[in-house]
Image (cartoon, rainbow, N blue to C red; front, side):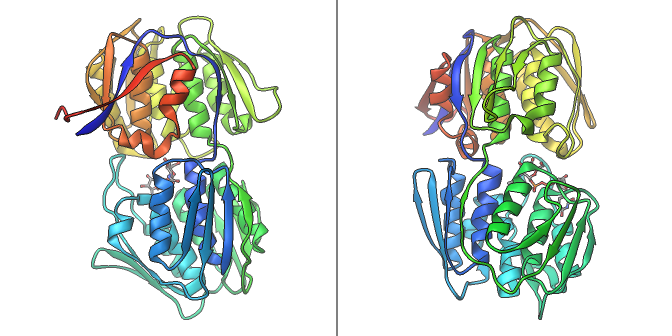
Length: 424
Ligand code: UD1
């Protein structure tokens, strides 16, 4: 049996929705707990499948992990195991972020490679090169990334691309290296800032969080801490797109609106009225009519997030006019366009670009989610389709969107979770 979402198109979304902690933050913060012996507690954690999966990875390394609603407590022992096995890592690509903390704390790590991903190739060369600069030997051996160091020393590291994962892994090793590390062309995502804040609370010395140069002064040891996970800007933006596409009126709480400055500006250009002046933890978006076509270019933060590319395509599909969407981060994300074409979208791709000519209404069809964000994008498209759209493989959506269906229903959407034999 398989689960799908049955989305009945036509509703105008209205009301308020609360966003909780960011998936792309909490998983790294859980890994960072490895850096200090004792109990680290995270609050505002999203109740999504990836959190207990990451818990399993940490248990395999010798930690005690307690997940109770939105609170996660991780007790790291004095002696960590340094091998993360394929069984747990294969279920969660992000678990590769234990590499840096293990090298930092144990001076060695062996982490199975989970293999390819639906959004494109995800090599680890920048992670490995950074660790090598810090003094570790790192190779891919028998399907695992292995790193070992006699001692770690500070270094000057230039990243070819501001990779989120490489910045995080190098940072988490460097906080326990001897001397000063400078990471240039570092990623600037709010989730990196969140990680830096937690590491600083643990006793790390880091300057430049949120800029492209991170300077880290290594310390001998870190202490456990308590930390509140930042709100999920990708989930918040998903609700903004849902409101814009359904000509709705939605207030989004629990997310810093400045993390969405560019996204909300794009939606303003598409015709939305956006009020970001609230209490600083959200925004209200009102869409008075059919969206106007705008162009989108994905880039590392503060550029338009690649994770929101499916939402940009879904909006363009029903906008007035033609949009050009350029993907610069993950090449295979355009697989989503094939599913949109099933819904009647007038879209074509050519290399890094997609051209979408907006039509007034999509037409329902069975569609398949190939990753978390594509799944959410298809549900949004289903809301604007005539008839009932079945979105299959919703386990992807469950990995990234807590209480997605409940939130949609509260906003007035007609969506159900159905268990049925798989359609293909
Ligand atoms: C993270 C996010 C993901 C988001 C992405 C970009 C998590 C769990 N996932 O993924 O949702 O879409 O950031 O914002 O936080 N690359 C290399 N070599 C490397 C590392 C990366 O070539 O060693 C390339 C990748 O193939 C990709 C680009 O760099 O083309 C960006 O990847 P990266 O920023 O590392 O993404 P992730 O950390 O994997």
